[in-house]
Image (cartoon, rainbow, N blue to C red):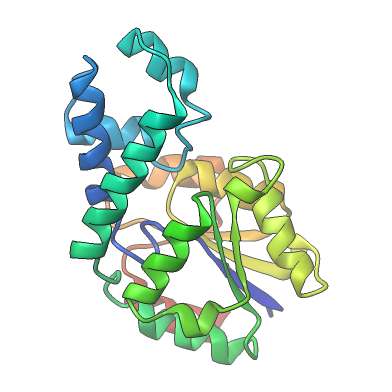
Amino acid sequence: MKFEAILFDCDGVLVDSEPMTHEVLRGMLAERGWVMTQAECMQHFVGKTLRDERAAIEAHTGQPLTEVWLDDFYQRRNAALKAHLQIMPGARAAVQAAHTLVQGRIACASGSDRPKVQMMLNKVGLMDFFDGRVFTGHEMPRSKPAPDVYLAAAGHFGLTGASCLVIEDTTVGVTAGVAAGATVWAFCPRPEYGDALLQTGASRLFSAMAELPALLAAA
């Protein structure tokens, strides 16, 4: 199948941000009484917005999820990312291959907030590939797992979701891509998550971003 556009998630696909983000979140939730391991924190929150998880956070901490607390989290998270963020191994070659294959019709479609996404893409040197084509769930009526951010990215190119390939790494993101009508390939470096990604609707799994250029060439 020839795809007309390729739409990338950001966290966990283009940048290795999830461990740092969730270590900050885990620490801040522990300060409020919700103690869990980093693995448990990631299992609960990866691919989701904190506002969407308001009820769970308030139930476990017994405290309201305030804008002040959220702002503090964003500041701590961004400081950690600015200091330590790394590109996902193989992501630059993958993005370059996608850019060439579809003649520049690539976009970054993240469930996160725009300042964070743009900061991360700039830090790892990928913003030139996505400048003017960054779409974020915080700016949509609904974030992932709703399809809004992927429909917006496809619409930017005058396309429907069915013409697009989505690259995702979470069940929440796969659900969003499938709901947009796109073909979804799931980056799955940890095999134990493969079944869940396939059951959610991913049509292909791959375990390293370095594999993507060859997969695209053969599609």
